[in-house]
Image 1 (cartoon, rainbow, N blue to C red):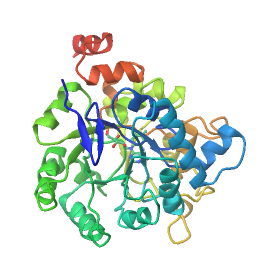
Image 2: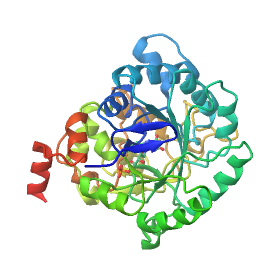
Image 3: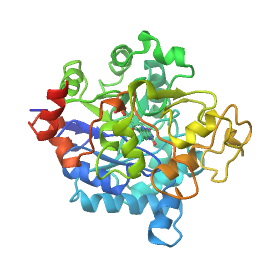
Image 4: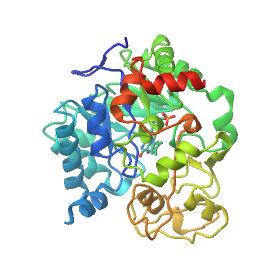
Length: 373
Ligand SMILES: Cc1cc2nc3c(=O)[nH]c(=O)nc-3n(C[C@H](O)[C@H](O)[C@H](O)COP(=O)(O)O)c2cc1C
């Protein structure tokens, strides 16, 4: 019922990419199962050194951990394609995460949360560099144009672009809540803006993301000229995701007005960050109870992290997100990031059930959602 998705030399049974979800939410188990069920599973590179070292009780650096995460996902996926999401904002480990993923046989590298200007350069230093599909995440035609111009210097263009709109989970590209909520920045209008640029660059495939929830939503974006969609929140709410039980329960129970954009205090990345307002970590941050703090250093910018400077401006997302996937959550509060439509999630399902629903097959889950709609 849905068309296949072609990316570089890859062919996926379904045009559905599971968005990378750090920290530890889109782990090898989730990604492996998504790919096994016909979509593209994407592991997140965020803090993989810590997560892998803890899981295997031995020390692994970022390059080794990215390699192992991809290999494990591929095993579950029965060798179908696997992607990795590497955030530009994770400056300390960016290059090693790219190289490690290539060592592990990754098929697709997706990179956003900043402009991935030097990705082709890093990739070209690896023997598998030409094999991998490179997909930037952009939220405007202008951002994509800057990326394309720079990538051309390395004789590469994106193999596709993911256009992420303001309803997405995690970080979003706008710097003020007014801009994020401005109807001129709707995903539909952003796509039009981006299509003008893709026409200049071989009509590269366009993938829509942010707020996409149902089979009908997917069809709508395919009819609008996209080759596929990327979805995060639906996959967060699966049995296989690495989110803690408390995080999943909070997604099922949250209401629309409980989902907010954290601004001040907000993410040290300097972008708006969508959260469940009453999750333990954010509730404390709003009350001014979280001290200036950074002990992980993943987001270091010129040697410092804004979470160290002022608790009115920023909080340490690394510790809160690690806790939300069960790392040190006995001593640390959990921070829950979700997409704007997370309140529509009614239950936690398996990846296989979700993929059936998204592919338009009648399932007990879709029947229930339809009867509630
Ligand atoms: C829990 C969570 C964590 C996320 N982490 C990342 C991340 O590490 N890197 C990234 O590029 N996008 C991240 N995202 C965004 C997703 O990859 C995806 O593009 C987005 O959630 C799509 O919107 P949707 O949730 O409405 O489907 C995250 C989203 C969620 C819900």
